[in-house]
Image (cartoon, rainbow, N blue to C red):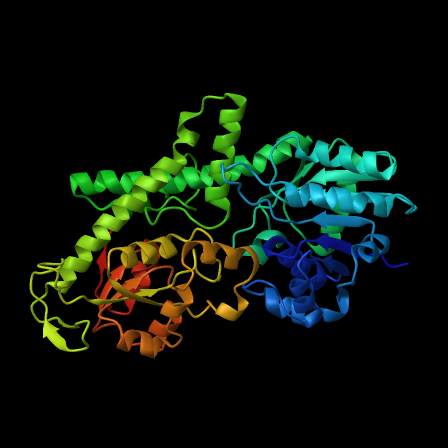
Amino acid sequence: MSPRPISILGIGYVGMVQTACLSDAGVDVILFDAKPFKNELVRRGDATVVEPGVPEAIARNRRRIQVPETLAEVIAASDVTYICVGTPPQADGSVGLKAVFGVAHEVAPLIRTKPGYHLFVIRSTIPPGTSREFIKIVEAESGKKYGQDFGCIMHPEFMREGQSMEDFRKPSFTILGTDRKEDARQIEELYHRAGVQGETFTVSFEEAELFKYLNNNFHALKVAFANEVARMAKHYNFDPVRLMRIFVRDTKLNVSPYYLMPSMPFGGYCLPKDARGLRRLLEHENIDAATIASLIPSNEQHYAFVFSELEKLIESESKVPSATLRTSAGQESIVNNQSSIINNHPAPSPRLGLWGVAFKRQTDDLRESPYLHVFRHLKSRGYTVKFYDPLINPALIVGANLAYIESQYKDFFNYQIPAAEDFLADTDIVIVGSGNGLAEALSQGMPLQNKKVICLDPWLYDALTSAEVKFSRII
């Protein structure tokens, strides 16, 4: 008798990656999302996210993936349900738990008459106490008893966008928060069958809930620390990248090289959200933790630094005597030392092109992207700015990703140039952001060598240098 399918509620990044990896390993998966368009995408064999390997896995495993019309069908057909819904930040920075508790209210009546034991596995990032509240809601509204009729595990995820499938299959560790070893053993057996590697640690609900915040805030701390090193280095006139390349060689005391590289402010969905969420939690619990509380202010200070240094470089590049730039009237002129508005007449402005606006390479995630903030800042300062990012398809920017970009810059996609050749032809100064597609373009001989280039990401320095592209840098 074959095992029953695993069900997954919420098919954003975490749900999609879990589906891709489990179905690849021969596990049948049932999916359901509150947003009908996501369900329809998967029914067609398409992924809901841009992530290396995921679309291909979803397409080749269509026979293993079901998307029923109702949640009732999902719960009836499975005995293990992963909850991968969003926990977006609220206006005050606290964690939004509406979707998590909404699932509790919806599944409770569905297990009321269902025979057998049902295990709920929460993968969403939630503050301590949430899992127990989830259990209370299900108990109260189903009439079923926790530990007898249903179980619950808090199972935080530690997957990096751009490398999520690898991180799912080969995690550094697996954390299962529960007070029932039988429930934990069921997930361990599933992962053993699916080929998931790494050691498993069974801890309390609260420890598992807090552990995710500790991880993401430490990553945010590493980014902030490296960026503060960069500002100190600027003061003393030495190279912070060289210094930190040596610093991260110590994998005994300095832990690992991940995140410990001076670069842009930390961004994306997780680090800013969890830094704000933990700070709010500390305030609510009246816990003093000055370093953690300083992460968001430090990140904002780094934005100010980046914006200031970038404008200096743009001005410097625009002053090169031989630089022919285009005026607002479309005529060519030699740029002199003017870079501000004098007597109400704008000086010729360089056409700026931002290469890569997603918050990191190999993703289309725009949420809290530092490069989006760069774009917005330059526009606010009156610069002419376009962007190129081969992974940004406006038709596929949906859900929270779309809501975020609309809240920041409603006509953002009007400034996109779809083709790299057109982007370079229409740009005087190329500002390399997250750099989606840059390595491929350089390998194919894209003529960046004759362009003025400013690189914001130190991880791309080597690629540009190898391609003999001269570039300026902030860090």
